[in-house]
Length: 121
Image 1 (cartoon, one colour):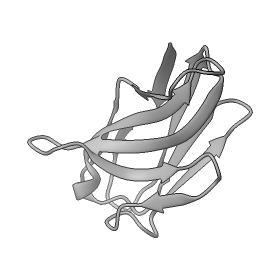
Image 2: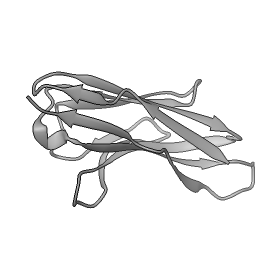
Image 3: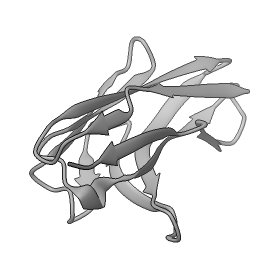
Image 4: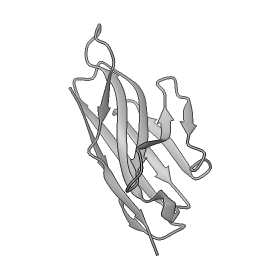
């Protein structure tokens, strides 16, 4: 199994920045894509940013130019740098990873427990 633990959430004012971190641990043979999702109250969980194993990234249009996803593959960590935060960014942010635990196993989808980000004046 693979465990994901997020950290770095909190309460900030509009225009400020936060950096979320996600540490993956457990039996990891190969880490494929890693991503950040978010879920606001009353809304569905949505993809915020993704980083593939090959290094490419993609972002939801609402965060392009403000958020940056990056990875430390040696440490199996993924980060989300969030700048120019807006009240509409308020949500629980979840780390997601697609990984294999053995050489011949299929890739599985793993989730962290979530970290709250609140943007309010």
